[in-house]
Length: 225
Image 1: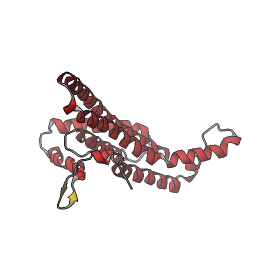
Image 2: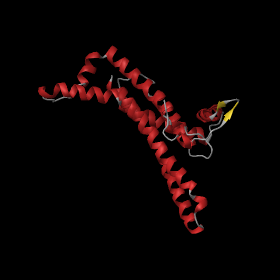
Image 3: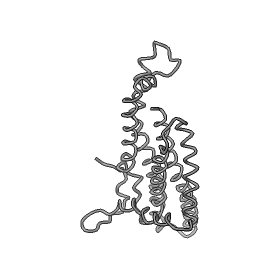
Image 4: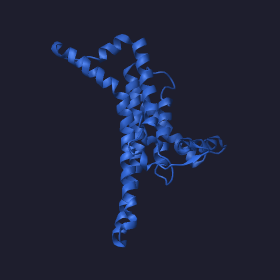
């Protein structure tokens, strides 16, 4: 299975006959000890502020009847995706979030666990979701098919949306960067300004896409309760 359509742009690095590209996903473990300092650093204070803001928002989406601590799984997913997206903007660091092997690994288990929990514990509620309120009786069979298909493709849309957005920006930056040696100095300065603007745009996309992934996962979870 081809997990990335643009695998030719990935750096090929190997040690001991094994690829070390995916080690970049675990670089976040290096900053974990700073969270255990006696005096909080600015980094840990920033993460605490982000986590509390996300907790309040996800708690609103899940409802007051949700289990305590259920928001932290989505905060963890948001943090992991955002870290990998941002790290991929640095030179010579492998962007794991642009591969379906990474995004599907996050989306599929989340969606599958929601479906199994919903159909076992709230079967009548899940059947009611297949027919929107106010649907004419003639259209009910078609609406069941449409809602079933839209429900089944949810993990695919979550995974492909994240991977495609990360691939698109990185591919454009790579293609523009490869044209640099063949340009004159006047056009090269314009290319540098374009690359800086693209880098700022990709930084925003990296944070927005991780937020979208976490919010949609939260909404899918709230539907089964």
